[in-house]
Structures are given as C-alpha cells and as structure tokens.
Image 1 (cartoon, rainbow, N blue to C red):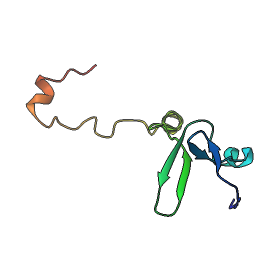
Image 2: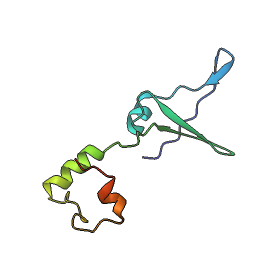
Image 3: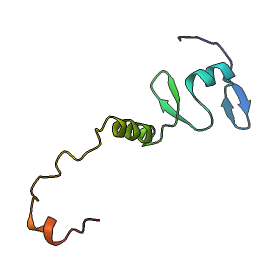
Length: 89
C-alpha cells in the first residue's frame, strides 16, 4: 500500500507534531513506541522492533520440523579449557 497524505505541523508546547490517521498506524503496525530515523530530506517513522521478536515462533517451527538439534554435538573440544573449565548443565 502506497498512500500519500498531506497534513500540517501542529504546535505542541515548544515543539511541533503531526497527526497520523489510525488507518495508517494500523497498516504500519505502530502502536506506542516508534523509532525516528532522520535523513537529509525526510524522516522515517517505524515501530520499535524488539531484538528477538519472532524467535519463539521460529524455534517452535524448528522443533516441529525436527530442525532444532545441535549440528556440532560430536565435535571435539577446541582446547583443554573447554574440558577443564567449562561446566555443562
């Protein structure tokens, strides 16, 4: 969806702001917290993405596909430190 909406800046105390229509916020997935990325001639507004968003669902899918096994489980330790200092739970 590419939509262009013209609006005006509004005064908010000593700052200025814009009103973003609900349909635009819903489409972009913006709820509360946003990131503003400043470029020379424009601003990019996007919802804050958490570092590990989606990981839980991805791991669950990996488990259903039996793709969650260690691929180097039989690899020899890299040094004596691995055997002497590391405690595996």
